[in-house]
Image (cartoon, rainbow, N blue to C red; front, side, top):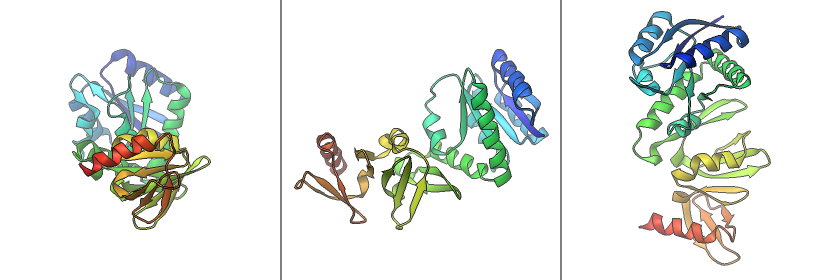
Length: 251
């Protein structure tokens, strides 16, 4: 059995979550319920849980306030939230799990399985630390993203990514050190995550880091020369927006 704690201030929410965990996640034992941040910190310190189901927004503070009380969290976290919270993008960046309310049973079971796997591999702690770092980073270039590969988790600074290339259901990350990381996720997902962080999808198969564009060539339909000397074609539909982004970078 894996010990778990629920930190949630809404009565009906924690009761529902407790009940469906008892019914559908037999490997989980709920050892405590906390309704405010300070109670959550005390419960975690006392019970040493394997997993914490943590509401993002509570009346007494946030789930991140709770996490910041632990220098090196040794538990896995599954966030819960009733709406598309501003922090969800940072959570996705860090490959930490979250559940949207009302909680779907199949999604709950999958999140629990992944949390148990992270606990066994001891990869979740680094992901949590990266999440807190990203939330505190004032500069987008200082932020990092967690990439889940066949070998485990890779923690990559955004400023070290030159471009991302699509290959069917896979995304190939090309880094400054000439390293290539292959992730089994569609480029569309990274477009949604990275478009506000200096990245631009120039056509169906490529997304580039605007800061790594060395030169823009308007001939032959238009293409960008990147810092690794690769040439990336620009879709005619994207050319005007791309030029505007380049001009903004130069200001």
